[in-house]
Each structure stands twice: as structure tokens, then as C-alpha cells.
Image 1 (cartoon, rainbow, N blue to C red):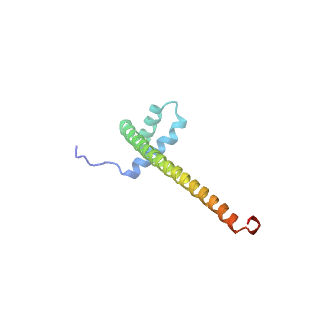
Image 2: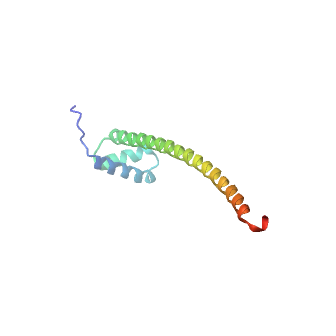
Image 3: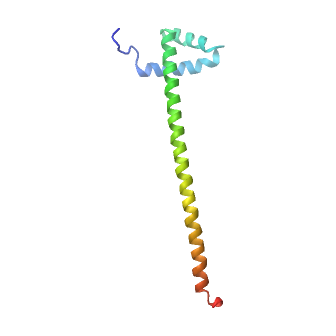
Length: 106
């Protein structure tokens, strides 16, 4: 075995798209894999490996995305708290200076 890829990334992506579409037309994942693999002229195990790799990649990307989302949410909550404090200070200062400038209060 030479370790070279026999199939292009485009072919693999097409096979996975076909598998996704075929799932609705078959009673099981195994039958969908067998049908798509046969129509493409590849071994069912090859298609299964591609699907498993794609599933792992998607899961890893989802985990990274979830971590990034949580970090962004934490940052935004801290920013909101800081802005609320600043708004409170500005409201208090505004009331103070408005009272000093109001001639009817003297």
C-alpha cells in the first residue's frame, strides 16, 4: 500500500452528500451506505470511514464553536456589567450637575 489517496476530496464530499440524501430512502444506515457505495463503485467500508471522519470533524468543530461562543458570552456579560456601572455613574453625575445649575433650587 502506497499511502496515496485514491479518491479526491471532491469525490469524497460528493459521496457524503449522496449518502446524506440516500438516508431518507433507506430503512437503515447500512443499506444507505451499501447503496451509495455500489452506485459509486467503492467499498462500503470506505464510505463508512469517510462518514465517520466527517462526523468526528463536525463534532470537533461544534465543540470549538461552543467554547468560542461561551467565551464570547462571558466577555459580553462583563462588558454589559461595566457599561451599566458607567451608565449609573453618568446618571448620578448628570442629576448632581443639573441640580447645581437649576436656579430655582438655590
